Structure formats: structure tokens, C-alpha cells
Image (cartoon, rainbow, N blue to C red; front, side, top):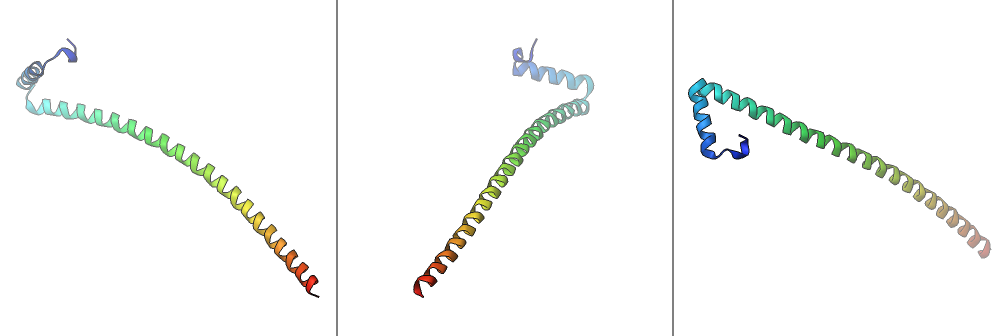
Amino acid sequence: MSNIDLTKTDIMDNVIRLINGVGFPIVVSGALFWFNIQSLENQTEMLTEFQRTMTTNIHLLNELNTETSKRNGMAETVIAQMDNIKLSMAAIERSCTK
């Protein structure tokens, strides 16, 4: 008989028989042990998924950092060129006003 075929009454009857056979503390200990194992399995799955997510985020942040550094370098080059143009224009203005 599979778990799907059991009704609530069947499950309760089995639990009562188990309690009467081995005692309540042993049944509760077994149930808590099973619950603990299930919780650990769920926690392991969640931590594995969290680790995958963190690895992906780190990769994306590194790419973003690289792209930002490239753009900062380009901006610095443009600013330097603009400064050179300003200096050239100032020199032209001075030569025209003489």
C-alpha cells in the first residue's frame, strides 16, 4: 500500500498502533528525527541555490565594474581632450586680440 492510498483514518490508526506498540516518546522522537532530516535536506537545497545566485551576482558585478572602469577611462580621455581644446581656443583668442 502506498502513501497515496492511505486515508486519514488509516494514518491515524497506524500512528495509534505505533504509539501503543513502542510508546509515545519513541514515536515522537522518530517523528522529530524525520522532520529534522527533511529540514536539513530543504536547507541544503536552499543554500545550494543561494550559492548559485551569489556566484551569478558576483560575476555580474565584476562585469559591471569592468564596464564602469572602461567608461570612466573614456570619460577621462574626453575631458582631457576638451581641456586641450579650451587651451587651444584660449590661445587663438589671445592671438586674435593682439
